Every structure is written in C-alpha cells, then in structure tokens.
Length: 519
Image 1 (cartoon, rainbow, N blue to C red):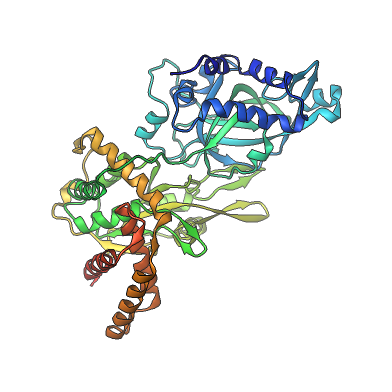
Image 2 (cartoon, rainbow, N blue to C red):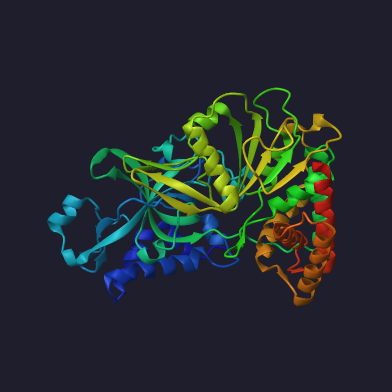
C-alpha cells in the first residue's frame, strides 16, 4: 500500500524540496544529498516497490511530451554520454528558498547578471536513453503496458542510440548530488527519478529543445534474485526446451549454450571473462532476413538481448563503436549495458571486400570477446571502456568466418526445419515455468562470483591434470585454464558455490563430447 507521504512526494516534489531546504541548516553544497536520501528512502525501499511503481514512467507508451512540465517521473535508462560540461545553477534564491531541480533558471546570462557568486553550484549533466536490447517482457515488468493515444515519439537525438532506427526515449539528466554522479559510468543501467521539463540543449543553440530530467534520486540496476527450489530440474527442463524447439534436438549444443547464457564477468584480475561461443554448421535460413528460432527464445529468456545480422554492407558502413563528432558522442551497435547477450549471425555474409571501417568493426567485436573492452573514438584520442557482453556466433561453416571464439560447438540437428520458424509457431512453456527459467539464469549469474575450489579438490584436479599430460603431450596449461572456467560455469549452473570432484569429472566429459565433434 502506498503511503500518503509517498503520494505527496509525487504530487508536489518541488514543495517537498523547499520544505526540506527551509528546515536545513547546513551548506548549500551538502543539501543535494539530503534531497536524494529523503526521496530514496521512499521510492527505493528494499523489497518494497509499491511507491516506485506508482510513479509515472518514461517509455515509448508514455513519452516526455505526454506529461506536463514539473511532473515527477521515473526512467529506467542506460547512460550513453557523460562528456557534457557541468551546468551552473543558483543554489540559494533568497528568503530561504533553494534553486536547482528546475526551480530556478539555468540560463548563464541570467545567473551571472543577478547571482550571488557564492551561491553558484554545478550540476552534472548526462545523456541517457532507453535500455538498448531490453526484452519486451522486461519492459512490461518495469512499466506495465497501458494503451495511450499519443503519436509515435520522435527522439530528439537519434544518433545517440546504439540501434539505428529503433524507437526509444532520449533524455538529458541533471544530477545535483555530484558525489553520487561521479559513481556513474557510461553504459550503466540506472533508474532515475526526477522532475521533468523541456529546455534548450545548449546555450549556443536555444532553438533545439530536449526533454530534461532534474534528478532527485537514482539507483543503479541490480538483478532481483528469486529462490529456485529445484535448480537441477529447472536446468534440465531449460536445456530440453532449447534443444527441442530451437536446436533440432541437439542437447549438447543446448547445454553449452546454457553455460554461455549464465556466464558473466566476476573477476578481471585474475581474468575470468564470459566465454564467447560459436555454434557452427548452423544452416542458412530458407530466405533472407529471417532470424533463427533460437533468437526468439533468447529474447524470452534474457532481460537484455540484441541480435546483429552481419552482412558485408553492415560491417563496411555501420557504426559498431561510439565516436565523438563535433563534441557529440554518437553511439554504436556495441555500446550496450553490462549483462547483455549479443547474437551474431553470419548467414548474410557474402564474398566481397571488407573496407577499413569493416575491419575496425570486426576488431571491436573481437576485442569484446577477448578482453571485454571497447574503444570509444574521440577526435585526437581513444579511450577504452570496460564491457560485460556475452557473445554467441552462428556460423554456417566449421568455424566462424570472422571471429575467434573461446568455444566452438558444431550443431548436429535432427531436423533443420525447426531452426527457422515464425515466433508465433514457438511452443512456449507455461508462464510460471518461463518465469522460473528467467529467474534461474539470473541466479546463476549471481552465483558465479562465489564459486570456489576447496584445497582437496584443487589437489585432485592438479594430480588428474598431470596424469592427462603424461598420456597426451599436446595438453597444455591453457587446457587446464579452460577446463577450470567450464567447471566454474557448470557449478554455477547447478546453483552451487563449490567445484566438486563430481563436477570436475562432468566437465571433462562435456568437453570430450564437444571435442569429438570437431574431429
């Protein structure tokens, strides 16, 4: 139940801020955290989202223009650009009235003309967009669909969204709690709560107005983990569903795909990155522009999922990496939030020349697979940003024609006809079962960071590996590293936090089956 206090915050956010300021005795510099703490205590209560879901949401069904200026709204978004200069605002308007949060003008000429310079403070400005690749079911969880009569929203700066031509919301946010703003990074998924307005994009060009969110509090997204009573059964059912309905009955590929879906970065030093996966021998579609049914299944399982149908034209002309042009950061296909899974299909590739831009795009994708980093291009320099993107490649041949992935599992489908069907023809499990699949994958990604190896098991693995090397001189230390990575994933996929001898043996057996197909 939503309290009367929460309703008051929604209806009169500016009045609430003024009331807080009136009773505040500290300095203007430390007042923004007071505002953030006050509203966070109401809207970001642990395990209680009642007040948050009562807030109007910014989304394609409720675009900025559908609200009046001054409305308190929430926006679950990805930070696209943090390079904008801070903005000045008048923190004290006199007579115990505060500025900021859209209460006072931020026009520089007005501020400098009338301001007490000691009352001038800075706000952090960023550009944020709808979460790229957010699955439809996840969107409806964040903001349940309500039919509206508003025309289709036209984003004011479409070049700042990773997927060209995809409908989305773009907003400039102004954060007054600068200390908390410094903790935010490009590509973070954040729920912002703020007072909505419309303002000129810059002082240099007052003709272009954009939606602006004056942030009162925010929270970085974190997965909600549900209890999975029988993880072994859920795991088996999920593998069977993917195998039967998307992979032509190939249980081995389904199991390796599951391990890939449940992986994420849990350490960079020492490096423990999600393995990239090629499913090779994957047939071409019966006609162009048809996605495999596995793509539809992934969109139903994962909260953030993108598919990039590779072609020579896309590689040579598309923008995969963010690039700054005229002091404005243009997005690229690979500017994606942490936890995103990306499917690359190679069936659209034809013979032809890959130009310089195509090579840059291929290298960028390979760098994500190798080190989980992405270079942003600026006029006189490049900056490297960390990523956490799982990559799956569908290759027609025995291996990917473009990329070197950690894993290659050839498909052995019993019925190629089931690989390409319309989404309407997919046999979905009951909603509760599908929900348990989603919760299971999210839980596995959380557990992976806690997986460890006991001293006794570590000794057994070491002795076993020495024995393997004595039998096969081609076995190297890289093979041990690979097997240990798979063992950790296999452990996490059972929602366990310790690698056992049984799991080690299962890992070797799974790897042996994969290698047997490569011969």
